[in-house]
Length: 209
Length: 129
Image 1 (cartoon, each protein chain N blue to C red):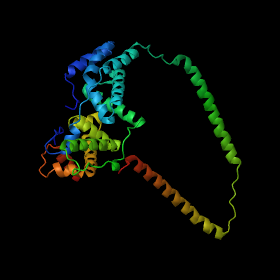
Image 2: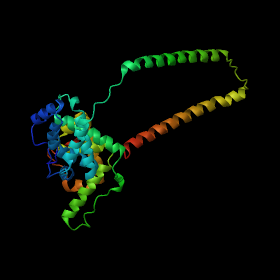
Image 3: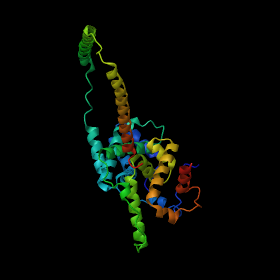
Image 4: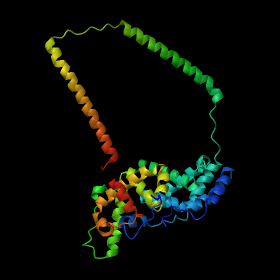
């Protein structure tokens, strides 16, 4: 699990929010306990720095505490919390950007020179993740949130407060950029018989329109 | 299309890499740090409300002074403009013939410069594209 979901139902969040709004600050601990994991993991995907991820998640939770009365309950608590956290992370990274390479400087690891398959896989993972961080924020964030929400496009779009169509278009563009940097991934895995529910197939068709 | 696209991890290596991210567990002090900050904020005295009742007379006075000053300024500028007489310079037909295209060239240069700045801004925004 990537960590976008909490282990308890929304009723618990609702009850804790009501208690906090009634003046019981300690009730916020339940909210922190349930959402600390998802928020730290989400921040980690934005910055790839553990210490900074915790600081950013802490800021997001404190901001949530301050703005709890502003949650209108039209959307679920998690939607509101993730949207708020995404805003906090985006602002933070605008103020202090992560140190990233230029996308052109990130090359695909050579397969022939690597004897161990596991090492090759690890190198590919590292390179792809660095490439995601090197994407312009407009494309980086849809990629981060799409995979954070376990490839749920609607949830990712809600977190960014964007229409699903816009989200899909940005994601498609981001994937096209990543594929152009990693042609080997294409060769080794993506065939013509991709299933309908594969993000690659859907986004690939979307990009081709 | 279903909005909820589940990963087909057998097929797409990009999805496999991006979806198969390691999961972090927050450090043991994380919860305590957040709650310390929350308790600190909860125990802080509420912010002092702005004293509107006391401030309103001062704001009204300042608005009056600035308004009066603005009216006087506009009036004096109007008088000053009225006293100026503009005389057209006597230029020969040859000089006018040179100046007119120069104006057009200057305008074209300004437009080109503006569009260059705009395109640079656009490129800067999308960086790699």
